[in-house]
Image 1 (cartoon, helix red, strand yellow):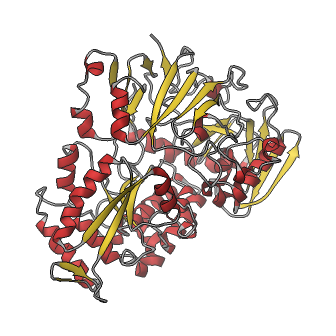
Image 2: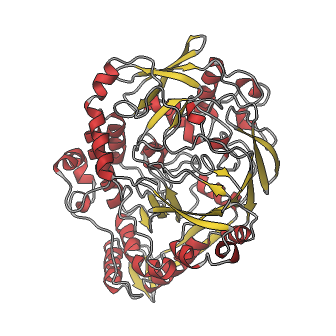
Image 3: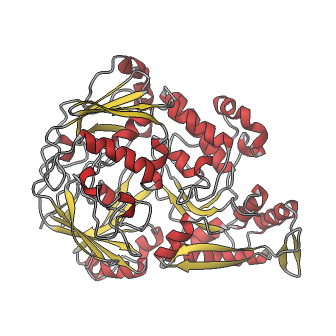
Amino acid sequence: MRPVCFHALVQGFLGASLFSLAFMAHAEPSHGIAMYGAPALPADFAVLPYAYPDAPKGGRIVTGNTGGFDSLNPFQRKGTAPWQLRFLTHESLMGRNWDEPFSLYGLLASSVETAPDRSWVEFNLRPEARFSDGTPVTVEDVIWSFETLGTEGHPRYLGFWTKVGRIEATGARSVRLTFNTSDRELALIAGLRPILQKAQWQETPLAEASLPDIPIGSAPYVVQDFEAGRQVTLTRNPDYWGQDLPLRQGIANFDEIRIDFYGDGDVMFEAFKAGEISYYREFDAEAWASDYAFPAITDGRMVKSEIPHSKPSGITGFAMNTRRAPFDDIRVRDALLHAFNYEFIADTLVGGRQPRISSYFSGSYLAMTDGPASESVTALLAPFADALPDDALGHYTLPASDGSNRNRKNMRRAMKLMSEAGYEVVDGVMTGPDGTPFSFEILLRQGDTQDTAITDLYRKSLEKLGIFVTVSAVDNAQYTQRINEFDYDMTDTRRALTLSPGNEQALYWGSAAANQPGSRNLMGIRNPAIDALVSTLTASTSAEDFRTTAQALDRVLTTGRYVIPIWSYAVGRVAHNAKLHYPETLPLYGDGVEWLPGVWWHEE
């Protein structure tokens, strides 16, 4: 297991930009593409650095999901599909190396070519590329997939399509996308779009697919069978077309992957203890320390593995819906943030073992710096200074308590902020200017035991301010429907972020996504500074400018008080069957579905 050196990573990332313009000025078909500079792996690379090419094939792995599913189509807007499917059953033109911030290498496409300014990108398809039914992957399939996903697919695909000015075949095996906006990342996003089979959807439109209409893919796994709401079984395609590709060496080693569904996390953990599922990702450091002394662990049938990573913390916590009053008032959001006694809650629930999220990109070189904003960040934010909180350019840290249950200093501050927003306590009830009591609902998934425990403690703190909260735990279908319709005051959120943030930032907190049904902008953020910074981020031509822009974005998001953050997951924690193994070398991004089960194998 090799250590990851942040300094070396930053220097390499910045150094790559020194020759990026020269590299792109002489663009020609290449085996890979990076956000900045040249991709790290050479054209003749044999295997990804974190994969074991001699890993044995065979065996079966069982994983668990909470909730249920009513669709096996992760590309349509309706229904809930097992989240793993779009990673395991379908492929894109290019594949990612998770040991670099953002680099892609040929998968369905053998090569990629871009304009010097990346105003267009062209992919050359491999003639041997096949769908699981044996039919070839054609340029027509590629064009249809882009058009269909971009117009009637899941919301995650819609934004990209608005930036495509033209898509066209440039040869029997080549396709070009020309963009209508300046955005260096679009070429890479295009390489990651899933490719579906056009012929399958000529009679039944993709958007109208029902549960039995399983999309045909080209990846190593296919859906073998399923029991609605209970289990899905994937099997490795023995005739998988890409088994000799460098990207696929040491990958997809299990013959069978089964996904079982459980009512909640507690039931799923009990199933793991009983050996019914093969591995369990633990997100609670206190549980990791105290709940794993059961027989299968102590006798060695199961083992605990900790997987370090170098990615940003992302944001995990409770999102406030700014589409609704009074959450559209930053003073109210700030008051709710002060009333959240993080130190006491973290000590009570996780023993203080997990570090706090201090900003969206905390733990990485993209994070906002301590103290006032730097000159370069200030220059980026200057046009929006009047619309930003005073501390956006100054010194800002999250409220911190003394760790006691009283949290007196922060509660006084919370009361003052509510008063400034026009509220007062009348007969023990926080009351608005119109005489209406301030109460709200926190929406959670049924079986979300950790967030339920957090909100139970938080609710007691709010009651001291005269704010009374209802916590509603609903089933998976209700939760999805209400989230898609923005029918909540506050809800849980967990948004993972990478070392190469780009267009997805507009989906997460861009104004255009704020009122789009099914949007991932849970907070309903509409902030022109954020919109401008995302555009600058994707148009950056050097890693230095990119880093400065990311730090500015982090500062605006954090000081906007849109989310009450909790703790970060600084290390991956996986308990698993002792017969499951993974390579010694770990990727930069650590754990993830393309690592587990991606590069793992079964061995007696």
